[in-house]
Image (tube, helix red, strand yellow):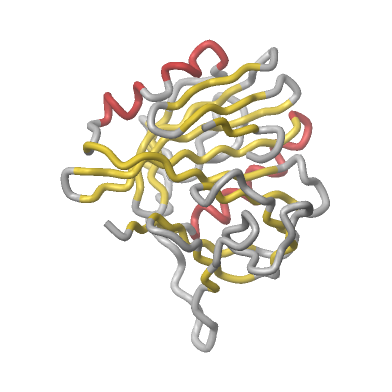
Length: 230
């Protein structure tokens, strides 16, 4: 299964000294986005998606065009799911299959956030999970960092490829990266007893846009909560 970062895109590449939301460092853990924020009194529950026409959140979109999403809380359908809250200015792009959620900015579609659900397999220890990022090391712009997001944990690495490359993540698929983009690729797992679901989060933006895009994506990821039907 091949994912194209040109068509779609855990946090985006910043300077090597920066820490992504939920990252632990030697100076102490940063604030950890451990779950979605509680809805305010009187607000409606997350809107459940229906996977219509290649979309996870938009029930009426055409696969030929992105679907603008009103601000609010949403939950993807399916066995493995993610609930998240978005502000105005986002649209959903038609995904390759029902295991992907692809969001981009309406005014700058090249700024993308992709959340992929991979395979279910044995629960991995940290060393095995970090090893999933080994294929990216030729293009990394910093050391891998431990992250926790919405009930999942794993590792993220900053990527700054100098040429078009394809990298394969075990249990998830292949990702095509471009030299005029910055990325942060995260490989996480959602634990289910002795098993887990692999999840990949990839944020993409043109190099010049990245620093401004990163805090916008962080806000969404702080609201995220993953779940599985087991």
